[in-house]
Image (cartoon, rainbow, N blue to C red; front, side):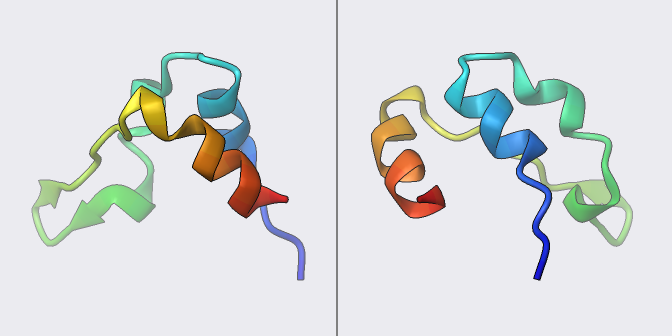
Length: 50
């Protein structure tokens, strides 16, 4: 399986990921459900990404 890690990589690089909030994966019915993760979770996200 190929997984696009563009958003995760941007987060780990300290970039502003709010630009991804308009993607379809953050749409639920008629509202946007994007929620930026806390910066202190980067180490955990890095370990999960492997």
